[in-house]
Length: 432
Image (cartoon, rainbow, N blue to C red):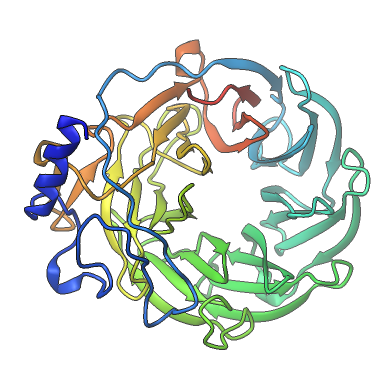
């Protein structure tokens, strides 16, 4: 065993570096610190949270630049989210620049430079948000805001020529659908819509997409403070970003309790340091561990120049009592959305004016040396600082010395696609 790793394991065993946890709140099956015991929860016995990852010792160095392969320009509108599959990528447009954000751009990404091959104007819309491709590649789903709110469902028989199948809108989607994540529960496709607040509170609406030509609402709940901003679905658990009300974990069919998307069951909640919970990714590591969720925080910003917000790491091995254990911070910039290469254990984060960041998320993220810890006075918890742990392994686009404002990022097919509000879409090589 490496000498530094021996020191780290010894320190952990001494109780010095288990950030965000203590003996009174540890999961009953998780009593040996670093072990190979399976993690389960009495509240969700059907989900095995996998083996506890071993701690890693990494050297802190200056992160190298991620190699830029090419760029596709969109300067008439602000570019929003990105979704790529195979040799085609889709980007939405947002707000009003010289033109309204009512267009979906369709890109050929087979080469180094993304090439615009077509576009779709979404009628009666003034701004678009999320865009997502279904896991079978058959459907494209786009969220619309500020004009009653809706999701538009397209057939992708020809991926470069989407054909509208349906548009779902009702009183519940007013005044706008900010995000629309899609995923399957027990084989059935659903959309999870985060509805903007208006004269009433924000809400989450769940829509059955098993017949994409005829979407059906199955659930609605007032939630969020002041927003319910986004969701992440996996293995029948739904992670809900409730802004200043934190991150909530719902059972929608994964725990074996009888819960469904039409009748969810809330398992637990955590309020991460600083609030402003914007987006979530439940990480499944290459060895089967499912212990950590990554939470994005979005603070105030100005397009093209400034942003604020950290990435927070939450231990969810007991989903009834999730705990923040680590964080990642960039001076002068804030995160927005992210994507994880789970095979290699790398999180790629859109960081607005801070470009794209690559973070090594292998191993036990709650275990660190005292010199790598941070005491949050606002949250009164001790957390591991991923930067001090040597986990920043790549920085993209900031070295170009041109203004960028990266909204979204997706790792797929051995490449990184980054949607940039002020420039369009970038294609980058992944971190080494």
